[in-house]
Structure formats: C-alpha cells, structure tokens
Image 1 (cartoon, rainbow, N blue to C red):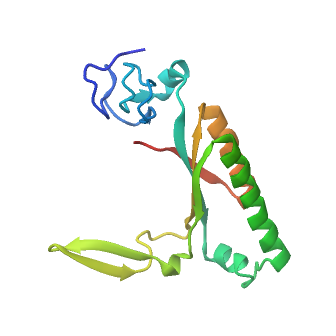
Image 2: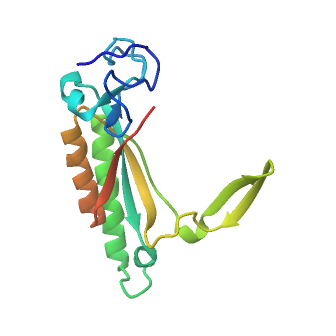
Length: 176
C-alpha cells in the first residue's frame, strides 16, 4: 500500500490527486492508519481491503411531503395508527440491535421540512430564512451513523435500513 509522505490528517497517498475515491481511517487514537499513528489519514476504497479498518458511515433516509403526511396519518397515503406504530417499532428494533453490537453510533429522524430554517451570514450578521435550503422534492428525513469493519457490512446494514423505511437510502463514509 502506498505510504503518505506527511503524517497529517487529510493527506493523500502518493500517486493520488483527488479525494473522490478516499475513505477515512478511524481517528480514535488507535494504531489503525498505515503509519500506525491513528491520525485520520485517508485510504482509498481499493487500498481499504488490505487495511482492514473500521469506518463510520452515514445512512441517510429521504422523503417527500407525502411521506411526512403518511406518518402523521393524513393525506392520500395516510398510514393507520397501527402501521405508524409498526414502522417506529421496526426502526427502534434495528437501532437496539445495532447498538448492542456496537455498530450504531447514533440515529435520529428529522422533523418535516416545513420546520427547517436556513441560516446564512451577510455582513457578519446571521440571516435566518424559513424552510430548507435545498430546492428539491425529497428531503433528508433521518440519518444513522454506523461504525463497521467492512464496506460490505455497511451495505448490508444500509439495506436493512432501506427495508424498514421502504425506500432506498444513501450510504456515505463519514470523514473525521
């Protein structure tokens, strides 16, 4: 595996010229980085198989306005109280299982996008606007941070999250 020339966080391996295919190593003080410092160096997906390091991933679920309505028991796709309870019980069971194995770092559902605010700075003064920043039909509905030994395990767990929320989820490595 290529070595880095400097032991600084975020340095690239020799011969690499972008961050596009890199994943972080754990930055918890253990000797998991290629140089043994545990300093959070990045390792590529292709090099990662040899490194055998645990990596944190964010599993993100998305939904549109009709999804929030359904979970509130309103709208054309309204879920019954029993369906809503079953949904939250299934998610809670998955969270409890992964917490017991040490693979769940944290997980939260988010409020509906209508409650979002966007904060920007203009001339050193915070400017607050109502609503989410993104102009999209789907919004981030919730997320979980998992800490797993392999990319394959991350995919397996993301698939389980997708099964509980009955839609695809996004899986991304977490840097830092």
